[in-house]
Image (cartoon, rainbow, N blue to C red):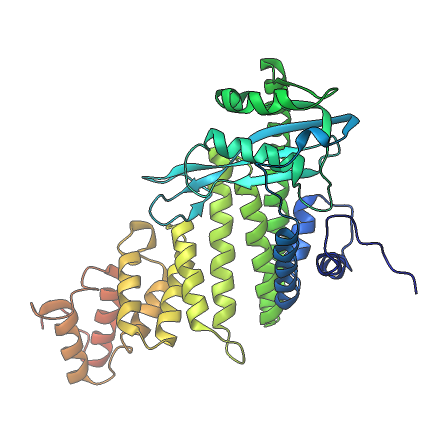
Length: 404
């Protein structure tokens, strides 16, 4: 039996983990397609991969301060670029990273060094929000040379282009770069080159946003078909893929109009996934439904079905009072006031209208008249109309809430 040769700088465990995960991947897409394939693999296999990566990193660590950079060969015709890339916004208190800016947030950055083949030699993200220090940039450059991401090996390019955004770090980078042996050369990116790169990135972002939204819509429709068939597993899978595509689109600098579209579609997908978790039978999970509904509301607070699914999830969790709070907070919105589904579930959350005259009078007094009663739904017009309709049906045609 033939055995694949383990690339230099990579442990057999890491190589085998990668081989297993890539098995079955149908190529032809871009890196986001490959990463999406990886995300669908067995969690145990992914854990094995991460452990193998950690083991490989530990085995291949070098001391960057004592490494003999001058002893490395210069690869003829090799061209490297070192770039500063924006990676989102971080919360200085918690360290959490988000796609969009928020109050008190700071931008997060990554230093990337890649070669003429597009292979990343280093992709070092800052641990704290804010611009990276000069020492951090220098260390990333040294790692690209002496300790690159496997299976790339230590070597030097014939030419290195330093992004203009890193120009402030040149006093720290210059002594190291000038010490490297000929024929290695380097220089700072020109304004024209910077603009060309920006235009290329912009075009790629536009294509990426369009692709993300298009693929998300396709996955959403597949999820809808699975939901109609009551196939919870398939529906959740497709809605999740749709949400992942939307996250890809949001990360590629969409316009304000596109971002509104992304958020609206994501709210629908999250709400639909919540509905899927609420389907009766094995696998029903009201807590996951509640989490998805809350995220849907966060993405689009004007999407009525998200409030409906939140209320249904809370009721399944025997938290009817919280369901009433959620519903009444939605029904005070003018565009939701006549929403049938929200009003239906509000009546349900209150246990329905009593069928006997005394019980109904007591209900209406508590909800609409008494100063110390439950005032939460008191100003919900449709809820009051329905209560009064029930009052006329049970007590008599002349009965009204005001006359109680």
